[in-house]
Length: 201
Ligand SMILES: Nc1ncnc2c1ncn2[C@@H]1O[C@H](COP(=O)(O)OP(=O)(O)OP(=O)(O)O)[C@@H](O)[C@H]1O
Ligand SMILES: O=C(O)C1=C[C@@H](O)[C@@H](O)[C@H](O)C1
Ligand SMILES: [Mg+2]
Image (tube, rainbow, N blue to C red; front, side, top):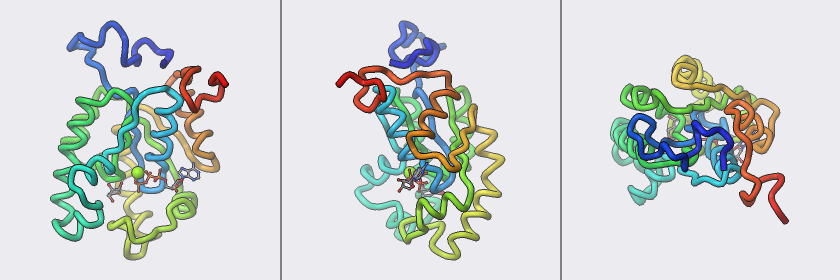
């Protein structure tokens, strides 16, 4: 399990309202930062559950995020997202990945206060290599590189404001990013988690 008592989801204080159990970490950042990939790998290393808000919305709605944007428009998606983030922050005890734009909703900025929030930083060069800008990202379907850059310029101050930790992903593999997150949070992987480097054979 995690080594920091303050962040241990199974700590004895878990029932105390003042120290209510929370996600070990909430991962934020723009499309292509690697939120889903890194949050899942981090959860594996720590031996805690992984929860992705984008995936949860798609499962709950029974349709893709692209379809929600096309059928109902972005404002409806943002309401669904706001509600799912609030639910996940209240219920999840593992590692949580938010959608790229979730932090721009004021209620979500408020809800993130007091949580451990990791901003995965990335440049346009790495983001475009990673995601290839296919049609599955509705906000990046026209002029993807220019749109991503404008989006990141607008959002960067908010990512920085909501985050308690920033981890640079440039030139790092997902496993190396996980190492950097663990170091930033002062945590070590649980030895018996299946993907821990020191897991028993
Ligand atoms: N550090 C990394 N180095 C190289 N490739 C990566 C890295 N992190 C993620 N990837 C790859 O980049 C792609 C996008 O990653 P991922 O879906 O995790 O990003 P995301 O931040 O969750 O994006 P979105 O906001 O669209 O959900 C995936 O194919 C993943 O394997
Ligand atoms: O950056 C964004 O605004 C988005 C990112 C994705 O994670 C999805 O939440 C959706 O495509 C919107
Ligand atoms: Mg994702």
